[in-house]
Length: 207
Image (cartoon, rainbow, N blue to C red):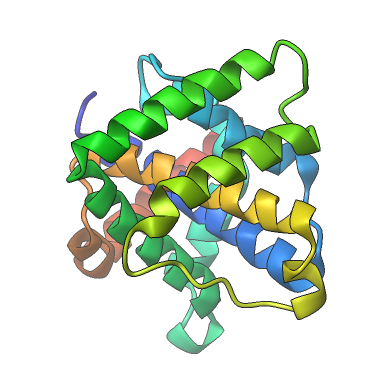
């Protein structure tokens, strides 16, 4: 994959899209199902030829681009700090995962097995959420520091919501893999904010 600012920005938008969906489910108990599906599909595109194709198309990460635009373009006190914290945590956990070959193999095998079940269930079926959620708990959730999701107890205690959140955290970490492969790092978010904002707006103009 080319280490272009465009591809880095698309991958970063994938992280922020997943983070936003997690925040919405945790606080409201619901979010846009089509956006969940777009994020989760990225978990099963193993041999995509580009970052954009991991999300199906640029439109598949359009919501993430809009979130990224809002987060990078807003004053500090106007940003959704919870979404940013989830995104940064996903990037940190991806680094831990990538340094653990045994766990990477377990994740890859698990996702391949879950993909087989898509012959019988839709991606949005609660059984699929449960399988992805269980794989997340067996693997990434054991890494430190864990991502602690904040929200309303009534929504977080709902098992279907909990599995959706785990699945979306998984998708966000998948996007963080792409981000790293394209040369992205946490320092870039701090010191290249304007460049990412400019690229984000160019991408939004294509939608």
